[in-house]
Length: 444
Image (cartoon, rainbow, N blue to C red; front, top):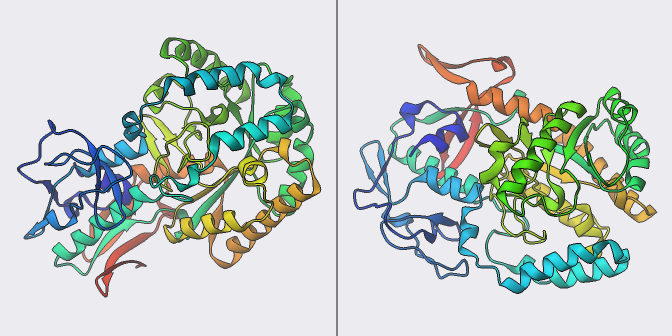
C-alpha cells in the first residue's frame, strides 16, 4: 500500500501513514476517477470508476479521512501508480481490427514509400491525438501529483513541521536532463561524429542507440569511437521493423539475441524501435535500464504513456521515460522547427523537479533548419545548467544514481537526519512542508 510513496520520496517508513478504507474491495471493476480536480487516476475504488477516459469522473478526494496521524484512503496508491506507470489503463482501450491490419500493411509497404508519403500518412494517422484528455498533453505528471497530494495530506495529519526525504537528484540539483540519439539509417550513422562535435561544443554528452541487426553495418571501431569520446552506446531494438512485441513467444527469442548484442556492445541500456513496448515482458531483457516508454504517447504510433516525469523500476529494470516530443514529430508531424513546445515541456517538468529526456535522431538533422533548432535546444539546456542548477547527465549516470538512491535510508541522530548508503555523499536531505496550506520543499 505505502511502498510506491516510500520509493518515490525515500522518506522514513514510519512517516508514511496511509491505510485503506474498510469498504475497499479488489472485486470492484477498475476505472478512472479524480483525486482532486483534474488529477485523473485509474484503478480500483470502493465503488466502480468510470470506464472511459473522457469522463465525467467521480472525485474521491473528499472521501479521504484523517484519524490521528493516519490518512484513510479509498484506493491503494501503489496499485494506482503501477497501473499508470505500466500503462495498464490501456487494457480498457479496444483497438478496432482494421487498425491492426492497417499497421501491418503499412510496415509491409513502408520500404516502398518515399519519405514524403510516409510523413503524410503519419500525419493522417496521428491527427487530433494531442487533444485526447488522458494522459495530459504535452506532459503528464499524474503519478507525481498523486504523490504530492498524499504528502500534502500526510503533512496535514502530522504534528511535525516537516517530513524529511532524500532529494530526487544529487547535490540538490533542481532537475535532470538527458540527450539520446536513435540511429535509424546508414546516413544517420555517418553523421554521428559530426553530431558528437555539436554536442561537445556545448559540453553535453549523450547516448547513441545503435540497431544491431539489419539496417546498417556496425563495426567495433564505430562503437569504440563513440565510447572513447565519453559518449554512451545502447542497443536499439533488433531489426527496427516494428515487430519486436508482436507476440510473447517471438519476443522471448528476439530478447535472447538482443541480450547478446548488449554484451557485445558493452551496453547497459535498451530502447525499442518506434517506442513499441510491453512492460509486462521486460523480465526477458538483461539490461540495467530501458528508455522505451513515453511520458504521454499521443503522438507516437503506440498510444499510452507512463504518466510520470521520474524514473521508476519495472522489476529489476529501471525505466527512464521519454518525457519530451521527439524531433521527428516536431519537425515532420507538427511541421515546425521552433523550440517553443520543447521549452514548454521543459518548464512543466522542471516545476515537478523531474527528468527531461530527449530523442534527437541524427537521421533527421539533415537540413540547416533542423540543425539550428537542435543547437538552440542545446544552448537552452546549457543555460539552465548554469542558471537553474539543471543536472545534464548520461542515461547510465541516471541509472546509477537512481539505484543508489533506492538503497539509501534516512537515519535520525538525536535531532538531525542523515543519509546512509553508497553514494550518500552526493545526496541531500530535503523537507516537505506546508506553506499557506500548500506543499513546499526545502533543504536543511
